[in-house]
Length: 376
Image (cartoon, rainbow, N blue to C red; front, side):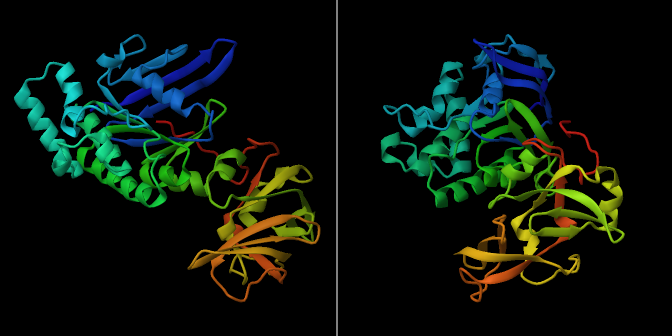
């Protein structure tokens, strides 16, 4: 096992397009780090640079203490699991899992030992004589993982390994991968566009956009204290509600005001943002911070809305609504049969969980206390 260190890593394609730039990140020994972001954000490129499948334009990449910028993929001591499994269709499960060891000229008894060991961990003992076409999608994915773990590498690299599975199987396989990491304790870099995978699998989550790291932190920190508006909007389903407005002082209170929305800041928020009076800001409220009944932290005013649509999700529901001036809100709350389309109601805000951002897609979270990117 070994740590993986990015030092100001960048990848520039012909034509001057940067797929990744300024990547500073240290993945500790035995840590599980997930890179997440929209398509084209640079996450897969970053992973492929670790594997040696993409050249590095600038910066230094270390695996353990070795600088591996010029090291061939086969000599990097990493194992990669791809989205499409990349199994050899003419080989049995056993031969697929043994192939990499055979290329490295492992003795037969050692190959047998490692394949049986990996098959036992992954529940593949009864499938070793089958060929990939006789396996389900989940079984093929386990074989691909097995082919990686038999090598006992310094680091595992996963490139969207669950994207070809159906929803139920994704959840099951996700749990299996988490348990596997807890058992093997191998340094792992995992790429996904699925925020749920990122939140449930990662010791830390690296949110990327436009080739750069936007935030690197624990899953809960990234969710509850997003560094900027992009991170806040990308993580969370339904997405965070955003409303553009300004801060004003009124009746001794500092208040956020926008169309149909007036919210007094809590004393600590007001002290922290007193220098932002009369400047344009963006209010962010997560759907679960909106309630049908005033929470203790609400000022009692509420936001008057008309319900447009209700999505019943069993124990919870998503309420889509708009104000009189068509400011949209979505609230996630405990399911209630009384909430129906076209109903008029008030949404109350848990002000301890609201955020204020500077304008722009990547505007900084001004209600978040100053903190580093936590890439160490």
